[in-house]
Length: 476
Image 1 (cartoon, helix red, strand yellow):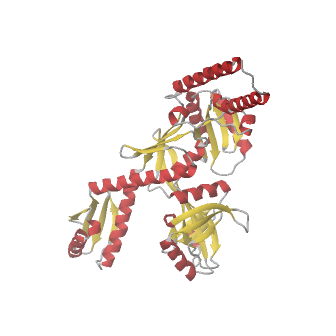
Image 2 (cartoon, one colour):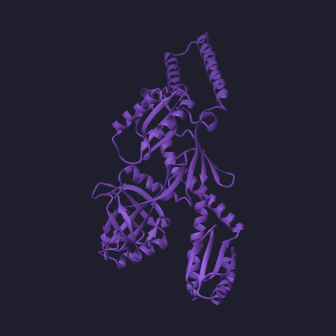
Image 3 (tube, one colour):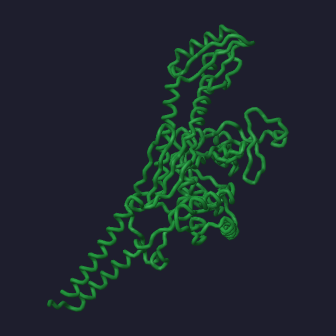
């Protein structure tokens, strides 16, 4: 029998202890969980009590309700109870809360404190979250319609063709009304021969008090616009997922108007859900200080102005035309304002946006400018006994400041509620806005079903092999 120095035995023992210690996290199976977070700052203790109350009333079994860095986490034993509980919590909490499916780690705190983490596995072995997203093609068509209306107005004015009105007609049509049939014919020929409008069908409508030209977009061109909107959304989603730091995500098209997103091993699914579907952006507008907002509230809204609301509900009158929008933002980073200590976002504009900002602020030093936070939200309303999703555009003024000096490409915005909101807004501005809104129509956690058998076999083989090696080392 061979004999070795004591230090070698101690070294082998230390390596074995180290290996076993950091292999232990893989033994602890993750719990099915629901992550609940509020859109705004709230009383966290009150939310925890409400969650316990809703779950107790439902009679569904659950392991625990605990507060984490990402919000409240409710643990369950299986995915069936998890899905039922999500519907109950979503209905009980109402609007203003995010309820997301999750897989929660069960690794003991002492082991996590030593840096013990489970191995990173793929979606088949590791599990994760699956989203099916519905792209709002109606909005895509609406955007095309609005762009054509705006373009035709500009084009006809440039060609000095007089028209009475250009309005949206039924069934995705545009109706252009003229004083005479002669003006209509001239306009029709000009539009027909303009390269930018080759995708439009033009038809003269007889009868009525005015000469009308009906404009419709060709189906092939409309399909091209839909495909472009879908591809743009996929690109934006990839950028957003990259910002979340998810390894090996799957983001791919399904059919003509859906996108599949699979995120392996995601812990903060509530944040992932918010970031994937968020449509938040900002724009910058001058305040209409020449007119009285109280007069505007009575219906006397000045031409070229609009009434907005600040976060505290106060009305404010802004100019309709934006100085620049979120589309001009090249980079954004969340930070803390050095003067006030409040959350802020540092903005860097592209060249056209910077030139526009420079020109406007140079001419308006000493005047107020507002930052408008815009977000498309989905409300669920009951119509004829059925739940119907309705979208609404939420616009609120988060900041009004006096222009002290001309601004250019880089500056800072404040007025955000929390560092989390600043962080999320910066992420969305960096990743880019969605071309059209999306709805999460399916969400589920994916357990390691495909690789479960392989994991079990691998675990047994490692354990048996380890025992044989250990026995051999002891005997030898």
